[in-house]
Amino acid sequence: MKQPDMEVTYIGHATVLININGVRIVTDPLLRNQVLHLRRQKRLIDPSVVRNLDAVLISHAHWDHLDLPSLKLLGLSTPLIVPRGIAPLLRGKGFQHVEELAVGESTFVGDVTIRATYADHHGARLRFGKSADCLGYLIEGSHLVYFAGDTALYPQMADLAEGLDLALLPVWGWGPNLGSGHMSPYQAALALQMLAPWLAIPIHWGTMFPLGLRWLFPKHLIDPPHAFANYAAHLAPDVKVKILSLGEHVSL
Image (cartoon, rainbow, N blue to C red; front, side, top):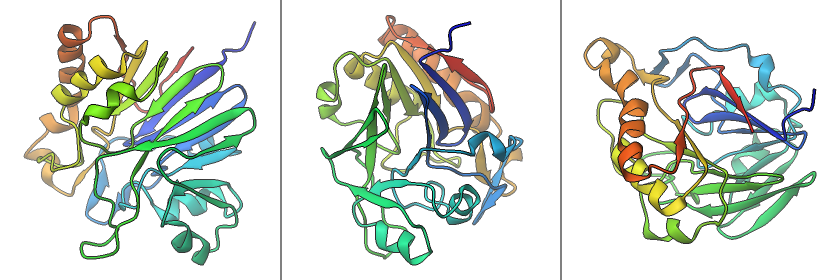
């Protein structure tokens, strides 16, 4: 049987495994059950699923996207592609292969091109610390994929890419309030009007939540991707939406 050119597996939160043309890439790996005050509300799939990676993409320095213990599980020699300004932190922790990109810059992982895109988000790791860049990424091999990272809706999305096959879009945050620099399900559906991908997969929902609040606000763990799919059906009816549960994958 012919192998698919691309397979995408949702690990949870903003963590997605993308296997494209034999190149294995994971985004913003979060492979623990607790980060600061956030607890994993869904079961953690076997971390071995994300072994033997060719690259890791980090969108920004927030703790739920740049998790050092999770990166160490992947190995200090795993190649990391990060926003400009983050490399000193990672090299200081022993990571051996760290490449920084700014918006518009590109690099290669095998035959796959990785291009950094703008993200409308504030990326300081500490509340009053120095802010590093925030990025999304275009991943191009036999298919063209957009991983948005964390971002608010911004007008330049309309010019991001032509012929987009897949958009991985955040549709919530990690608590009962969305906060600035994020897209709501409705805003993510509006993004589909500008991006016009063939397929959209909602991410950044239902995995991590503040300790104890799942009992007070359970709908925020369940509703966002379904609200996104409903809005998308009206606002971008030509775009196919696929909601993946943890560990589920889709092939193209």
